[in-house]
Amino acid sequence: MAKQINFDNTLYLRGEELVLDNGANAGVIKSENGTVQIEGATIITGDLTVQGTTTTVQSETVNIEDNTIMLNSEHTGTPTETCGIQINRGSSYPVSAFWNETVDRFEFKEGPHFIDVVANTFRGSLIGGTITGSLKGNVTSTGNDLILDSGTDGTDATLTVNSATITSVDINGGNIDSTIIGATTPSTGTFSTITGDGTNITNVLTNYTTTNLTEGTNKYFTDARIDTHLNQSNPNPGYVLSWNGTDYAWAPQSSGSSVAEQDFAIHTADFNATSGSRHAVDTSSAVVTATLPASPATGDAIFFADAGENYATNNLTIARNGNTIMGSATDMTVSTNNQSFGLFYNGSTWRIY
Image (cartoon, rainbow, N blue to C red):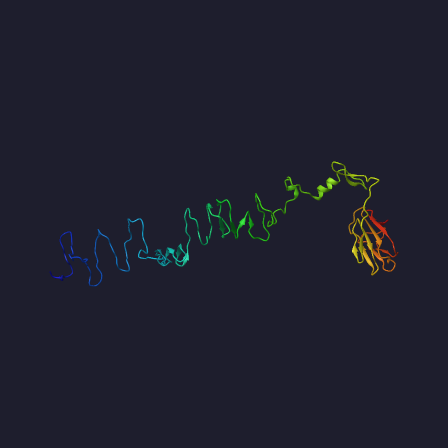
């Protein structure tokens, strides 16, 4: 049989089949210039294996009955290749969906830039990386950690954590009830429940007083409450607080009772004299000035005594501090040794007693 038959440009064959009887070897149809063109519809009833490095399909519609497309099918062993699908967009960057084997995740990009992914629902145990932009809709976490780095959970969104304990909630910015998180001067916020010992809570009770608190088993005390309790029986001057068998009450001092003598404060240098106190002044080393209270109350009294027997050498000066002493707008000088005296304020001037 001849191995080569030459024709002009066209070979016509009649019948329905062209059989290449090549024995055990595969039949080969090829062109001397490297390209074989088949015109019209072509049906291949067996498997199609393309052994070239590039397959180009110029048709506008491709229908594939397989429900799974395998990429990178020749790879074996440890995975090393990043693969995916890329869409040509003419003069703009192509967009692609790739599995990045280096970081073990899917990446959606426009050229070198990551792009938004929009879906009605995202489900899974982990979403890595950064979520940028508005996060809208319901967000539900079944894990123990919830981190919102964008500072907002979106407009009219519901944030739900279905976990008995939240190990860590890290909010790095945004607002809670118009309060800027991390602001030096926070705005008004509304919190229905605050738990804990309050160690790290500041500025929460600034606008509250004990009037706003519900009194429970542990009573709280204020100056006004104590004053009201002590003054409830309208004590007279000289009365003492005593136990009557049921409660403490003001009562006249009994004839057999004694009151401990009030101690003296010893001074060797200038000092401020306080109402209701007794001062022993030692002027052995230098002159000493005692300054009276600037705003005394009617009935306030102060007592002075010589502690060093040197008033004649180094005087004791009583500075009036804006009020008069015995009606005089001058300071008082004590120059007699062993002089003891008291001053009381009658509402208009200090008087000696």
